[in-house]
Image (tube, rainbow, N blue to C red; front, side, top):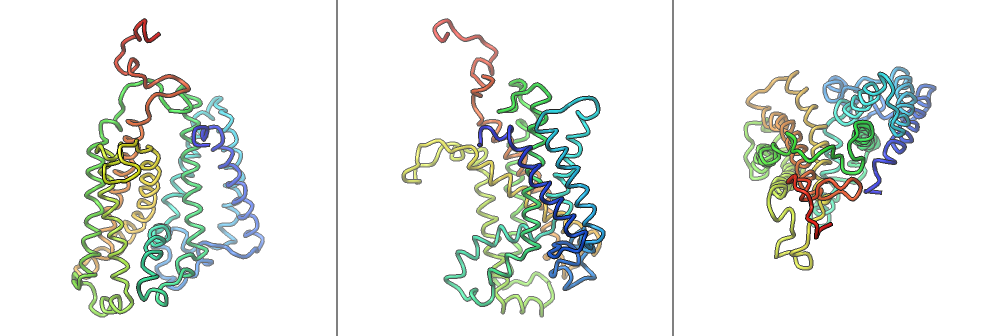
Length: 365
């Protein structure tokens, strides 16, 4: 399935889109479980700020339901046409334009920080709950609320739409459908890979430093009462744990340009000296980049509307730099994947003689 993903991703995207479109129809006619806007209890707890935190913060099933249904049905047709490689006339650019717009909408526009919270705090809670007092303070039910899971599902669907667009471009542009190569010339992504990796390493450290400072007893100027409440509830310890994961991820990012990112190092007993599967690095890096971007734009909105003061900057300003982090990490991951994809069994591109422009010797033939 990993090798043939370009053949089935469009159909899988169509199935999800049709199912969600039918849900929109269900909500239009009064069905329960609407997960956006007025159906999102977390947002409605502070309704005056709902729209600031999520662009669908004021959505109702009566208004959003028909839109979801229409987009779902139209998207189903688009995904099927793209899966079949239909490229006549204006459809050659209309179909990918729809796909990329949908991908950005699902992964960034309708998202907020809670999708990242669900993914990031799952390992933190698995590690911390058995050994700390979190059992009573932080419950799994509080983490896995339906609106949060719905946002995560939408984000994954957005990634599927992006992959559908990539597969369609390969199918209609003459490139190899399996590896994506049209030739062996380096692109701007290849040239930017190293700089993007170092940027992706440095960008999250600003956020990490503020969270570690809170855990160590430094309030950094935020409201004293709010800071004490965070100390009593263990919120700053949780933030420090999340920041530690971010710091570890920043270090692992350097593997995208280091030898230990291609060959397992000596201290990894049982794996040392073996080749690191490229997707072992690429898939988590791309997923983290999308999650970070989905949360970052919420903080950009908050800062743009509320501004920044001496007492609020640690709460929102470090997350604004996640835009840089997410974009740089994505470019770094794609550059790593392109560098390590090797020879393609389907088109033959990537052979040493293809890269150097020389012909194979008679002995090789």
